[in-house]
Length: 503
Ligand code: GLA
Image (cartoon, rainbow, N blue to C red; front, side, top):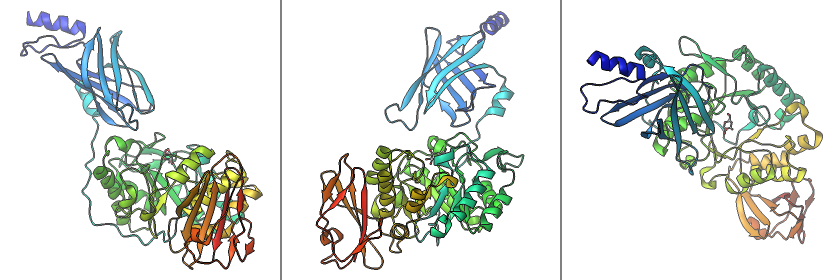
């Protein structure tokens, strides 16, 4: 009889526990393995168990590890549940479902920006073991990591805004060449940073290898160094980076060592799928500390760029984890509304910024073509007034004369790079106009006048805007014009800016 029951259960695709009073398990019980599901979020397995009518289960993914089933239940023959979502406060969970189709489990759901629609087959215990997610323990915080670097905001170029993951060795070398030949290096731009998309797979020892587009990382860093430049790389504390490449989860020390051995000088560390594991101030901070300490232990000097979109008051602890810059916002895009929203309103608390630690409102879009010259002037003026890192994000080979003049304006760069390291801020708002002030090391004050409206507007500036009693010299930083007093008013084009220093 027992045997007959088992046979029937096996035919139904179920298993039975005779010890339990509620004999029937669901048809979903057991291990289901997913062989060729899309890489994002990389579903590898689903496990379901039920006992006495109570169902438990999880879906294992490469990005997020095990995703627990919340409130799993069988409705109309389908297994339904909710799963935690991330990065979306309006949808803290999302509905998922599983249907049995021709002996396969058809799993549907959504997590972050990815739809899941995959079929799994029944698997064996050994397969489940092989696919089990390996959790990494997060070490506790240690003493603050001191940094002698970035006395002024880092300057350079990063691949992401223009090339996204379509970046390769040849293009990075070409950017280094262009940085020198255009004069950008001599204007202060130093770092050539590879963002997401360089990663391949780990070797048998867990050492991350570059993908085929980066045949020899050491040769590449040597090349960039030979140009008098420095070079940066990118990773995430999650299992996967934002673009879905291999992250440093579980391999933090090895990766820091690898980046040092290759000769990198800068690491951007992007939370990405790490958000799933580290989702409060304590764990996020510790996850950055883990890498900060690992970089320090290599003995090589690294600029450590924290990319966690401004969460958890990062500016109040960014320095402690070894960071010299920390993002204050989500990603910039090459349009005025996004740039203005970030630059005016999401550029971080000024009290956090200063020598060796900078609010980072994201990389520059100047030169990418999505904004007018006045809008780019506002972009550059805002970043300089904010003492923001100046990371160019366009194809340096295609820098036209006006863009080059904007990016290499020594007077504007000097305000950004001023040794006092004060982040400027708005001191007066009148209609569509904003007046910003930034005190400088030499006692002068940088003033900017922004017109956030869609029509030209005029405003008079006064010495009081710069907290000065009198003014003996006014230098217009974009035009180079000098005079001994403020004019009766400035007329600023729509979405444009005027930038001055006052003595
Ligand atoms: C995130 C970061 C970006 C960029 C991409 C790469 O979106 O905020 O700056 O690094 O990841 O995938």
